Amino acid sequence: MSESLYVIKIGGNVIDNPDACSRFLAVFAKLPGMKILVHGGGKVATQIAARLQIETQMVDGRRITDKPMLDVVTMVYGGLVNKNLVAALQSLGCNAIGLTGADGGIIRSAKRPVKTIDYGFVGDIEEVNDNQIASILNSNLIPVIAPLTYSNEGSLLNTNADTMASAVAVAMAGSFDVKLIYCFEKKGVLSDPDNDEAVISSLIPATYAEYKASGVINKGMIPKLDNAFLALEKGVASVIICHADDLGEAVFGAAGTVIYNA
Ligand SMILES: Nc1ncnc2c1ncn2[C@@H]1O[C@H](COP(=O)(O)OP(=O)(O)O)[C@@H](O)[C@H]1O
Ligand SMILES: CC(=O)N[C@@H](CCC(=O)OP(=O)(O)O)C(=O)O
Image 1: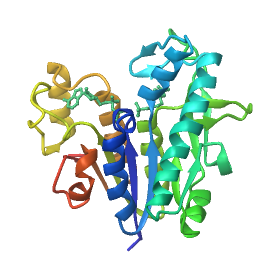
Image 2 (image 1 turned 180 degrees about the horizontal axis):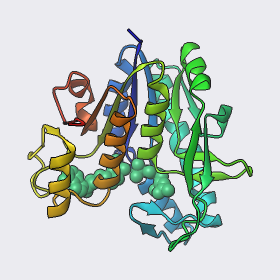
Image 3 (image 1 turned 45 degrees about the vertical axis):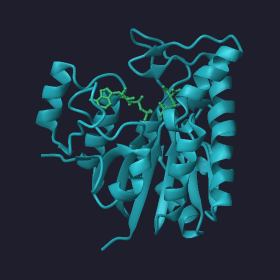
Image 4 (image 1 turned 90 degrees about the vertical axis):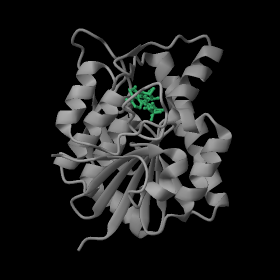
């Protein structure tokens, strides 16, 4: 049997809340075995951009990334957020190494072609260097990956963090038993958006389609679930969506929403 590997994604609302982020990192640091942290930070990028008088525009949950915004997300994701997470993990005895997709050539993408919308410097992932990531893991380092990729043309590109986590999980599934866990600020996928306790314990594609059609599942949850189902289809062993505070229980399937393919 292959070795187990956790790929854990932490979203921007948790990163923006220092107490919630510290609680999450304390549990992450204690998880036994091999693990990778993929982080977002969209909320922080929007706040810093506003301070620089750069307006944020989102379409279908994706940030329109012109050159000034690319500079902001490079500084925020690759610098501020990534390095603070690494420093916090070091203080918890966790030998983390902060990486963008460009570092070690781990995640290459192509600039999204302009169709009806020009997303600017946004990258669609083309290749994940699973051998390079495995060699980092085998050096007893814990990769902390920022949502930035690189292109053959030598540019950094902004890439959605949920998609990064799914792509990394899929690439690693060739040689590891990968458990993908999306941690955010709600207790899981909810059947009633106004009731934070209404957690759907397990979700299959048919039920997802119904909830989506009725509008119960909307906004950022749609790309997150699309990425979750895609990961399962492509060989990831399990996918869970849970509250960042519940990571410790979620690894045992005792919290959050478990995603199934059928
Ligand atoms: N049915 C649902 N259950 C839970 N969250 C939902 C649901 N439908 C929409 N959402 C929204 O999806 C958001 C999570 O997506 P997103 O903002 O992309 O997360 P992240 O912070 O992980 O990047 C939640 O904050 C919530 O507002
Ligand atoms: C292209 C694109 O939209 N990239 C995202 C990357 C950050 C992210 O995904 O952060 P969260 O997980 O906190 O939402 C963005 O800039 O918002």
